[in-house]
Length: 425
Image (tube, rainbow, N blue to C red):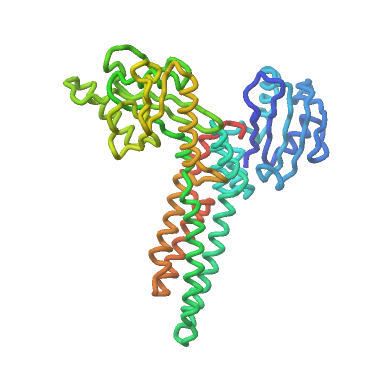
């Protein structure tokens, strides 16, 4: 296997550049550059020299002998001065050595997976951590990296293994009339408890759903003040505002992070009753679809909203004299009244907190599909009165769960996962 190297601290220039070396030639490389191996896991100041003996840099060197390392291999870190020329000189020296090459994106983490230092669920959590935009996403991802999903799957598999063993024993002794109704009740109770634990995790939103954020759609008739409110909520002029009806023709999206939670605000075309304009008609249809799939629709019209939308009714332009009276059940807002915008955001954040009440790791869509397939198998076959059907249902569920931690991961799937990683990670 090749020994790989890459800067893992971001591209220079920087105060410090951390360059990692991992693989079977790591020890020989460190000896050649620094004149010998330092004491393991202790930062040591060393002078690094190229093959001709020319000084490359004075660097802090850390040596981590495998397999108890991040990658499961011999691993070294060179903490260099972070100038472009300095880093380039060290990289040229490394690249000139036989058996060494530059790492590809995600290759350090992939080796950790292949060498059993982490499992697939932790690797996917790390990918989510690198892409996290909000505090809520960070907390969910770090829980996965810490192994919360992996431990849950391990518990589920251990429980199903015990259930499978009990079923096999009942099959073996079924001809001897040693299987009692109490055995069936105990088996049913164990399966019910397992289903409850799996269902609790499946009830949480997925990682992808959290990454999308809480979808807030502003809807109402033309010239209702949607774009003005959109700009006020964003605290910038993101949408064009004019007195002309139909100024907004298409969806306009903007992302906002408030108190660690991501929100996607969507300004929409005015919902005109009738129109001969084909472009406006398309905008209206898109507005209706956005509202139908929103987490909350801010309705800016005195008339009732469609009953099947998740509506929060507003009373816009509440600062105008003829709109001073706020109808019951509506929230008064005005683009020029910052306090009213803050109150509106408070309502939205409370709704979002209820939806994204996250206390721990979240499943990704792929993991959720596997866990749901396992649950459905147990619900369908695991509760059957035929013990052979039960046994097959449990075996299928275990295969689905094993895939979450990478027992059946394909090269294509791994390539797609680690392509999301930066070089040096």
